[in-house]
Each structure stands twice: as structure tokens, then as C-alpha cells.
Amino acid sequence: MSAGTTVIHFVGICLFLIKPQGAANAVHVVMPKIEAPSSYQTVASQIRSSLHMGGDARTALNVPSASLGNTGPSVEPHVAIIAFKKGSVLAANGWTPADLATANPGENLQYIQLAGEHIRIDTMPGLNPPIAQQFSQLSTDLPLPRIAGCSPTLKPAYQPPAYSGAAGVIEILSGTLHGCNAEVKDQSGVKVVENRVDTEWTVRHNGAIVIRTTDGSKSLVLDPSAGQITVANVPMPWVSSFAQPLVNTEPHYVAYYNMTTSSAPAQCAALGGPLRTVPACYVPPPFIIVRGDDHSHNHDATNRVALVGKVATAADSGGMGTMTNNSECSNSQWP
Picture 1 (cartoon, one colour):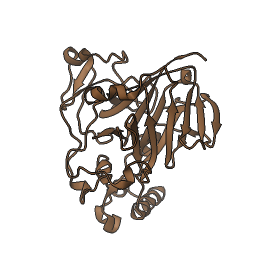
Picture 2: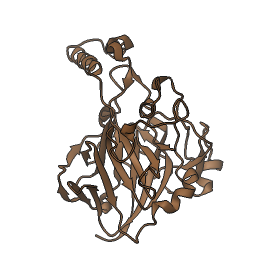
Picture 3: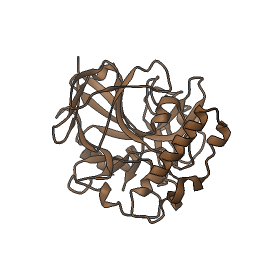
């Protein structure tokens, strides 16, 4: 193993807290628990049973909101995971990596599922710039869609130090962050997502990436040369088959408003924020995310796409594709 650079890719409902209270030199990535209410589980079970018994899929997949009882539609359940190439694990303590079946064949991935852990991914001192040095530029370097209205306050469950409502928290102390435009294609090459905003965390390493809980109870050592590492808070049916939810659900961005004190999260506006530009993601296919057109990883001004929902042309973006600032399963940042 030799020293080098790797990209840790964040996908899905991940809220980047800049300089959280008590951690003025850090960024904390909070992945909220997004679980199914009992009514959702009941209806989903009934649908699966109906389909198994030869029921009409068109009827089964169009469950009225009233079927969910008093809870109404909710955000589709998500799972917080860290995924990596099979064979890249050098050592594991407290976590048992499991095989991850994904919609794109041949990916040969494993993952660990998070259950509220607070995690630090060690980046050797001296190899990476402190993340605090990037704070003044994060409004342009990172920029992620923001919570656009309804409430300016996070619930205590999503604030430090406990983060009791989180499925996992990643602590970032060094390296560089930037948002990026991701595309996803199915096995036939058809785009199934083209407007999502992910985040890439670029770090230098000395031949290994150490993922550990801040209390020292669990650790995972990965060989970064084996392939990219992904941190995701996503619906597992989507990962395995690009499957849509079996029951009517709220848009995924509502999960961010559920983290606030808003009394009616589902009535809040889609994610917004000031006009910014982001580059295309660099994701070597195949993976959970497949970026189809530009793998140059060129992040200068000539290779950026404005967050205005326009189709970028080759002249203004290097052919990087469509970008909007309200994509349902984008990352977000606070404040």
C-alpha cells in the first residue's frame, strides 16, 4: 500500500453542519433516522403479499394516503451505510461487513450499517489541510441546497453533542469538501436521476483509511486503492434495484424539515438557497451512483453548472448535464 488521494462520496439525506456548537473547527455530517411508521410497514406488507399472490401491481402500487391511517404519507425509510469494495477491508473491530446487492451488476460491494454511531475517518495529521481553513470558501466550494423556509431552528435531537435523532454522524476535521452533480443510470443506460447534489470529501492518506467511532468501540481499516468509499443515507430498495416506494410517500427533502421545529414539514418549500455552481461528480462506474459523461474531475470555473435547473451546454459546462437546487435526495448544509 502506498500514499495517495481518495474521494469519500456522500449520497442522500446528509445534513452538513458547519462549525456546530462545541466543535468550531469541524464539520459534522448528520444522517437522520428515517424509519417507517407501523402503518407504512403494514401497508407495504399487504402490497408485497398481494403481488406475491398474483394481485394487480397497478392497484398495489397506488395505495391512497388514507391507507396510512392518521400518520398520513411519510418519507420513505432510509438506511445509513458506509459502502466499499469487497476485499478492501484490512481489519475490522465491532462491525461485520456484509455484501451489498446493488442495481448495477458486478459492483462487488460490502457495507456496514450505522446505528447512531459518531464516526471519525482518520486523515493523517500533516497530510490534509484543516477543514477550518475552508470555512470562508464553503459557501462557494461546497455549496449544497439549503432548507428554504418554515423554520430556522434544528430540533435538539439533531444538535450536538448527542445527536440522538441521527442514524449516524461523521466528523470532518481535515481534507476538502465540495458539492457535485450526480447522475444515476440503470443497467440499460437510461438516466434515473440527473438532478441530485452529492458531496465529495477529498483526502490524502498514507496507504489506509481508518474509520472509527469517537468512543473507540468500533473500527474499520480500508485499503483505499481498492475503490471509492461511499457514505449514504438512502432507501435500500433503491440501492438494490432502483425500486420506487411501495406506498405514497413525501418527497425526500421533507426529511430535512422534519429535523427542524416546523409544525408542518410537508408543507415547506423544496430545498433552495443562493445561486451557486457545482462541478460534475467524479464517480468511477460502476457504483451506487454512476456519473455518465465527464470523469475529468476538473473543478475549475469552466466546468461548473449553475443551480438554476437549466440544461448545461458543452460551452458552459463541459457537457455535465442538468442541475437543479431542489433535487429530492440531495445533501444539504446548515446554516
